[in-house]
Image (cartoon, rainbow, N blue to C red; front, side, top):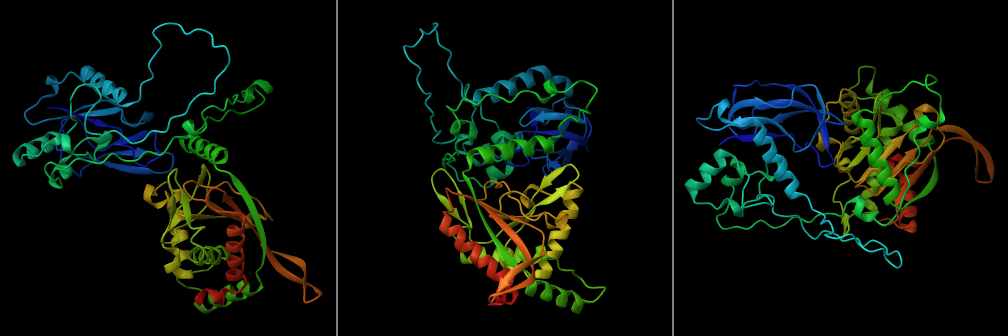
Length: 446
């Protein structure tokens, strides 16, 4: 029995991708774990591994194709003893398309034309309770499983209907059967309400096309790439659905700059590290998060998630967009380790070589524009995080100390907070601790 190879979802937020390059050709025999293709997403280029064994019967999507939707068939894998001529490609694609449509919620059309209501009613929004079990299509009793998984299940006497598949679009693969307990029933996974459901009922008129205001030939039109589209979607959603508020604090960098200079000097010219001000900010943020678990948290529709570690993201500006790789368990790492890890992640980000697990999630973010001379600014929260700090440039300012006006190197930090998670007083206490760590770097050793 042939199996359709579907466009994989290489990250939770991926909706489409570019099939950059095929690493197999028609007629090649593959097994689970073999690299089939390179898929380019909005953030990175990643390898796509086979989850089944068989022979490539037909490549449906040529390499270089852009905008390939997740779960769209991209190739056909032949089963044991099958030939390419035995498979009806058009029927196979139609079959998969019908299955994907069957899994999507359907809106019933009215049988008769509705009468005009006496008065307008607000639309009702229903929150989905649980995701359907992913193994069976909505039409009929078909179970999506690889040929190898079916053979193993038959040998072990395992009911495939009792398994939740981990392959593309919930397809059952060999590993699912190997780890299965006969008779076990998979629990439905909870589904968070989509942004569309949350925003339902709010009629928002689309903005007019900017091209209507300018004469043709007086501008250069640059089409959106995948990253720019993703940034627009995520930040629009975040700014629309997350109730932002902002807190600012000025930090005296006198002690930090002296400590940084001493540490870099002690390391020598051929040192294994070179510390920046941002490295100190990253470490101070991690330490402050551990002292304020209410800030080290994320919002869900049913609960607040308090994170056990400080996974701090650092905003990296790219020529083609923005990405926020994460320093995981930053509270456990020293300044040198944080510094080197940030540099390595930034270099790989610019080459689009980051893996999704290196930039998704996290509990907090740091965005620093001080190197551009920006004194202060505000940042948009990066979901599912609840806070982000915007770090301005360190500059000499006149400040009052002990009743006297003195010159000190000051830096403004502005924190954007999700008010659903972090109340004003909570955010203020966090910033007070962060300021203490920055102004007294030695206190991070306590």
